[in-house]
Length: 161
Image 1 (cartoon, one colour):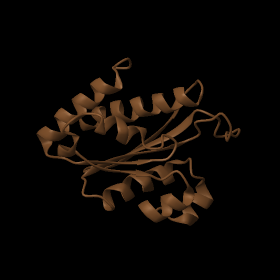
Image 2: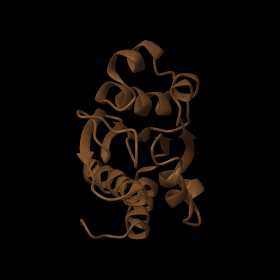
Image 3: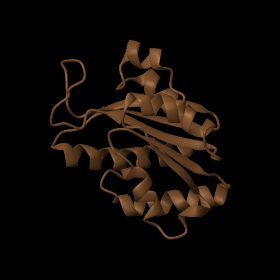
């Protein structure tokens, strides 16, 4: 649901992951840990949430998640190849079977013609493979970050069926 609250999304995600015995990791750049925070706001989240990586800098993406520095240089931090590498790196570096990753331009500065403020790449590493997509959100920094958290969780639920 588009208007479903983050808390409601987390409750549904908790039920799905517990039922399937899956653990989740997060790899966050532009949200700075907000997705992990939303997940761990729920009591009992240790049953299904394994860890969160805050990889705000390019160096952190490389050091924490194993993203190739040359990939970041060639594609830019806000790109499909980098978000896929972030999601896959989170699974590799955690005791988790799936991960959600986000990298974007939350604003107010930092945008460009091809990656304006509000551009966010999402990656979901799942047992069946990695998915990625881009979204463009309107609003100020807080609005972009809030929309990113909501979309990351809602789309993960969609992908899990």
